[in-house]
Length: 235
Ligand code: 1GP
Image (tube, rainbow, N blue to C red):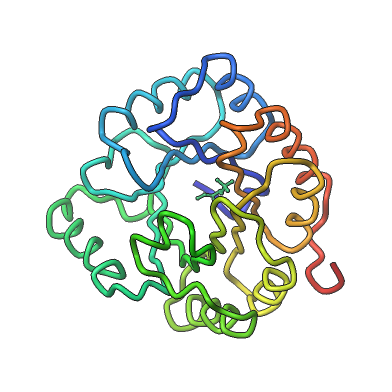
């Protein structure tokens, strides 16, 4: 799994219905990878079912792990979120410790990529669940990103605005703070214009909900992201 090569990814929620035609369009869109994951209602069964459907296509498919029970074999890789601004300390490391205790010997460490999540939409389910401190200004967000990169040596920083469009100036500030880590942006990307705006300031643009609410717009984000160069300095 080479997340360093991802410019655009679709995130599919196993708990949401998606027709075969829509799934085919998403998988054949030219996106760099399909991420399977969600915040609630994600089970082993619905995860494996969706993976099997995606496997009819050549696109790489990875699981973003949000619950230990849903971890499934057979993905090309696994994304492991650490919610850096969670205020509920049980969400920060405890689920990971529990996973290692229970699955330790089965884990293939080279298949994992850890993401330093910074959750910024207070209305998002993940924000409520983890009681994230979402009231961060750009400087604070950049400090979290530097912590992720320098203190924790994480390969990915993920600005998670799930369900809403993010603050472009904040995303740009965070990108400029990073030298090695890759910056993922997710939240509210549902048409080419927003996709281009975010593609200028983030390394990887994640499109989730639009697949279910505005498929045509979601599909159009692929080319928009891919034809836009990252230029955080003067975007
Ligand atoms: C969700 O960051 C992703 O985890 C994408 O957000 O669903 O708002 O596109 P949206």
